Image: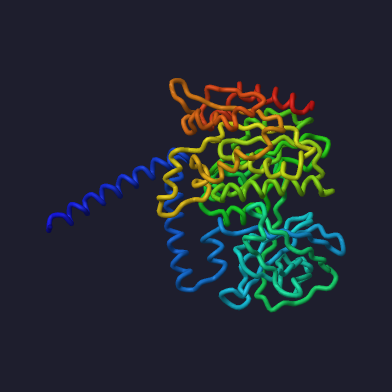
Length: 445
């Protein structure tokens, strides 16, 4: 009897070591070696946040601990006069402590809608403008707030997995009020147009940040769609959707080869650690709102996605199709997307802490099963680009079996295979030549 306990400990230790090695393999397989250290930091930070929450619970901590359980409150903003600068929306609750500021978001001009990413609960919203132009949103510059009771966010009130419709606010820039909230937040203006994808704003380090710390990436970007020039309604808008741990810079080679007089590239820059259903819903809403506003009136759109971005993009297209065929949508192109999932991602549920998007890309996940039920691919021109390596059944990361998942592959208008790696396909000369041929075909529809 006395020898059994040490033997059991040795077996458990071996099992733990084996799990850890498999876990490291999973990270390298899905995201690359550099992400191992990102995950270890994420693991440590989650432990620290849980301890903080146990010691002194707050909704702000809950929001950071469980971003996958938060929802996007969205509503209309109406200003009583023109304003070029950004506004600030602040969400406040009494759930754990009196008048806790849970989230603040700078609304970049032009402001048509407000957004606040929040857990379930009851919230008051406050709006501010930098009226004295001192570079800060201050307590005496409140231009509107909720009246008649707080807004309640409930899971049941969310229809697309992400968005809950909030009330409209009429904001009075000419009659500011003072609030007791401890407000002094620096104004940050974030343009949607950048000169180049080489801009530090799109540095690959931000892709890692979005995978393991979604809140930090959202603080960096302040919005979700970006371009390289001001909106031109006469051009075909191309919406590029990067993959896990990626940034818009991944598409630089393809974008450099575009015919600039005909196409305008836009980039969905999103935190890839979030649940894919929510990310798809967000993209769908951006396109849906863009087709209705006068600021960005969408006439022709082609969606282009790489890797896991293909799952996000297809989720968005399926959701758009619920409202009927989007008249502006010309087609969809994906590169090396794991439509059949990633086998190694099955380990996500056994990890000490899991990234939500990893769970979604596991074969047979509820997200993937729901994706196959969508109607978009039966009704839209779809071109599937896949990569392989000589003598191997994968692109070095995603298996051919997954890239060519029959439930998706058979819906393609045409498929193109290239002797290229998972990332290399985006920087391949032959790929770019065929890609531009497909674009011409879609743009003449």
